[in-house]
Length: 324
Ligand code: TYM
Image (cartoon, protein in one colour):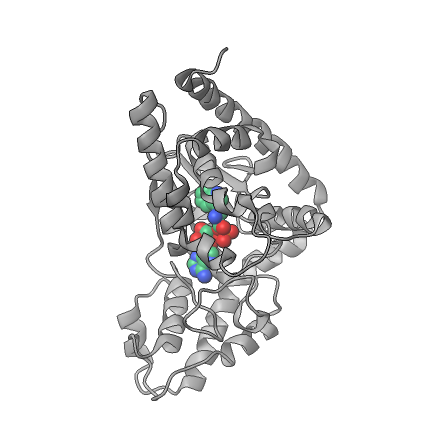
């Protein structure tokens, strides 16, 4: 059975892009050799508040359980609880090149033109490679924005294996059929993200009313037709979302809404998104009364993750010539 690992930054809440791009599949396909990591160390690469990081990590863990990750099946853990992540990241930093890190799109986007950019932002993708390679992951379920980071992880694994002997599994990314790249509802040319203003980002913590309002106010395109196409980024995004939450393909949806106005269409998208998120939101509310559940899951998760990570690290230390 394929070994799976994926990760998410602890920004506290989930948005619909995270959910349909990655987390829903984590939950649907979970198995005992699947590892899901809350990457708190990655969140330190840009300015942040210590209390918010702590709080965000707990919050996110709660949402992951609400989304259906079952700690009795899969391993859910916090990156910083397993020290091997930083240890391996250092070794892989000596395998990755400065040039390839400097060319990464995310580094350019988050770093360009900013004062005091951290060295951690540059080496961010190497820590991500360490997350994946430590668990010898065969598959990494992610959204489309992580494609370049995964390419680098593969390059690093191959280069390491070539230089030091077969040590790492070379991971393969997997993407959802719909919702791989959910766009912001106010700016259809930017991916939905927690760092953009709230009105274009659908949060799982939003009320159903707020969700409906955001979808009804989503930017649309000129014309009245409900169809997907490069000239209609707003409607295309809503069709993709509807496809992701209903499981119906886009041609079927285009046919159903042929002749319907934007208003009717958006109303139905809102209803479908709310229906889709209802069980997760309800479970999140229940978990608020059982804080011990989350703590226990993270504790056991770290133990299980550590056992695997330690085994890989022992092999890596030998391979690269560190004295036992
Ligand atoms: P992060 O925290 O930004 O996002 C978590 C997951 O959600 C997906 N995603 C989206 N999918 C579709 N549409 C969107 N608008 C959207 N926004 C986010 C992401 O693709 C991701 O799958 N660098 C990673 C975290 C990470 C990681 C790892 C991932 C660290 N180590 C190891 C995989 C394996 C990140 O910042 O994801």
